[in-house]
Length: 108
Image 1 (tube, rainbow, N blue to C red):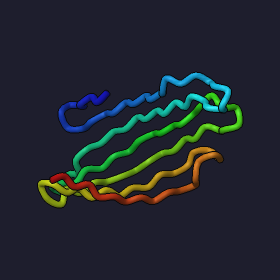
Image 2 (image 1 turned 30 degrees about the vertical axis):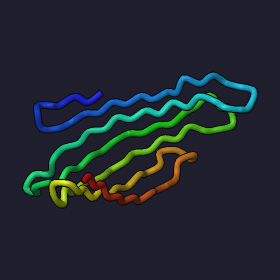
Image 3 (image 1 turned 60 degrees about the vertical axis):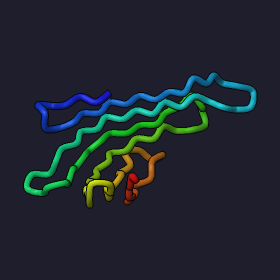
């Protein structure tokens, strides 16, 4: 679900849970949750910034939940191309301490 805040920022709430019961072959349900706020960067045309809280927790007793605080930016290079960069910071021992990422999206 995306909610526009005063028409200038977006708040995204995501809860994902596959419909999968515990089975004899060892599969477990995993819950992915995300709260994200994004906003255009003042003075920089075609640049957006975001901050989000992410969690991944499941029903497998052997797997610890993961919690991260994430920061990112995207740059619209042209009408069809967007460059993403970001940093994910682990909030608990099961999460990596830090992850840097980058990506590019293009549509034809």
